[in-house]
Length: 274
Ligand code: ACM
Image 1 (cartoon, rainbow, N blue to C red):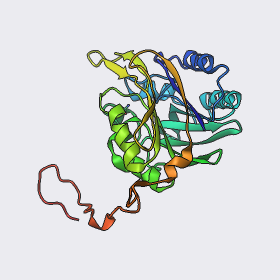
Image 2 (image 1 turned 90 degrees about the horizontal axis):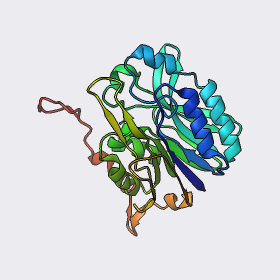
Image 3 (image 1 turned 180 degrees about the horizontal axis):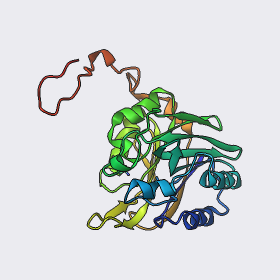
């Protein structure tokens, strides 16, 4: 499976220009799977929900349609972040599109910082798509800090996690090595670069360093922390079917859910009910 990662630097609100930039950078690229950043056509720092609403599109809208054209030109599937309008709600979503059209969206479950006042949280769980015979799971950016997200995808049989991101903290890229090892899965984190300060005093610098990690924790592709980048790696997703970390330790079947007490966390420190 040839995986391409396109790290970009979107201009806020310039959807057409950002789509043109993506088209230009993917011109002539052939791949089975292309992963792009979170909110890669709109930019990230919306001032308010009205501004977000003006940029949001339906899952069969113009952006998805153009990306389907690019998927056809690439001869594979694309996973990219966009603001999805559905009914009266707006989700921080990732679309999965292929040469024959859109396959569906994932709506970000764990919203980060100001996203909580802008977006509606997704409640459709973490989906796995069959992309040319390879089960590919989707999560978006801050979902990384909840190990349950990647675990849910691994337990559903995903062999590869496509992970569009707009990272501003410095932890995720290193943490993805652990996510890959603990699930024995390929992870494809594609981040953006550049800065936005549309809210005075709230400057955001996106950390780039997109990376593809193999099930043994080896980093197979690693972008610079600044500047757009086009990377690719050839992977054998079947490697992620082998879940043993030693001959006697299987990361999924050795789990002991009966030993994991699922108490509610109480911030005031009082005992929680199991
Ligand atoms: C993030 O979830 N965009 C940090």
